[in-house]
Amino acid sequence: MPEQPQMQALAERLDAALRGHVVTGWQPLGFAGLKTVQPSPDAAVGHTVRRVGRRGKYLVLELDDGPRLLVHLSQAGRVDLETPPKTTRGGKGGVVRLRLDGPDGETAVLVREHGTERKAAWWVLADGDDGPLAKLGPEPDSDAFERLVLEGTDRRRVHTLLRDQATVAGIGRGYADDALWRARLSPYATLAGLDAEERRRLVDAVRAVLADGLERERTRTGGLSEPKLGGHFEVHGRPGQPCPRCGTPMRRVSYDAYEVTYCPPCQTDDKVLADRRLSRLVK
Ligand SMILES: [Zn+2]
Image (cartoon, rainbow, N blue to C red; front, side):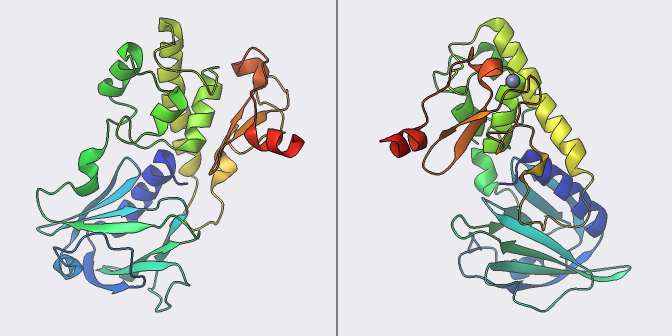
């Protein structure tokens, strides 16, 4: 799933490519993708892109005197930057193609779904409407997030809390795994159970993995098209491979829809956590 670093770097590339361009039209490619009824996407046509930014995992296109457009890529949404625009349907997962005109000619942004389950989506927001952004917690680089980790009494697991977009915005399974590994904390650690030093390590680790992730993501060019985005993680999705810190083969804990990767010596005092998928196989 694209997380904060992927979306931030994508926003920067789109801003460089599209700022000052005028929206000339939109082509609906899927039925379920558009999450708003009013205003119509037609309200964006004729308006100039002032800025492409990011909030949480949302891409935010701001238009001069026009509506704001949001894009969320969910599990496996992808964005292609087309110069010149194509006229294909974007494959079976097409969501929308936005066409723009700039000094160097026409460009299009194609949003499409690479996966099969969770769908990429977009919103057209009138002035003053924050839509789904209103429910987001603070960004990881904010003082509010730092206070929440250093002083919070939340009894949930840190892994759960980091992935809860209403608590802190932009982190998913991948960077949650990497941050806990970087902070040398168990996947089962709860925020309320951490001492002051562990909390400080957690804040620093979250910010460090996101900063490193962004640096790697900034080496991409164009949209965000590749089917697999996971190659940039240090530990996430790499069970069985040697821990980058101590060389011990890393382990996983499997849930129905995902798995958590961790290093026993680095994170759990060498304890191997029960893995449901594994115990089912053993039975
Ligand atoms: Zn290790």
